[in-house]
Image 1 (cartoon, helix red, strand yellow):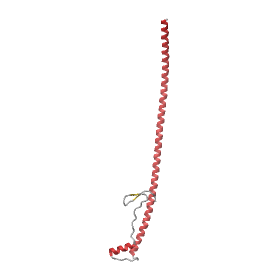
Image 2 (spheres, rainbow, N blue to C red):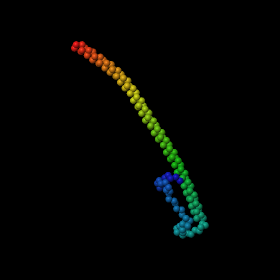
Image 3 (cartoon, rainbow, N blue to C red):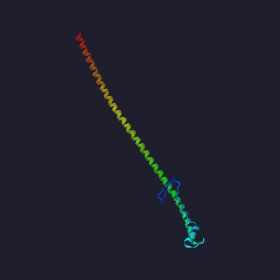
Image 4 (cartoon, rainbow, N blue to C red):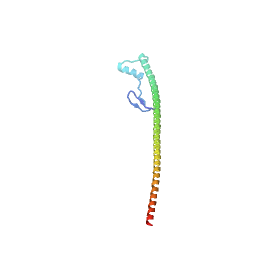
Length: 157
């Protein structure tokens, strides 16, 4: 039998692995004869048909308990298999979701890097354009200074 917990339908408790419900004590034939003497004052011999019926009933109960134990083992095996299958399916789904989440995060990161690269290209173009304008303005400023100095020196001489 499995080490999995067992549900006891009589008490509604979950028994720990290895625990078994307490066995039902079967009445022996001697106890049955003694009870009949106590309760009814009647002594019954060992060849009495009623005692034979009790013996058959006890044998039936032993066989029935064996069938029930086999049935419990089969149910436990089915539940274990079903539980393992469900756990594997959940693990597969979680792995898939984790993979999808990681892929989505990477896709978002790559998209962000691509947008940043485009923004950097735009910034480089703008800086190049500004640099040209600054070079032209600097050249005009130097030409203006040179012209002003030339005029100033020609006035001073």
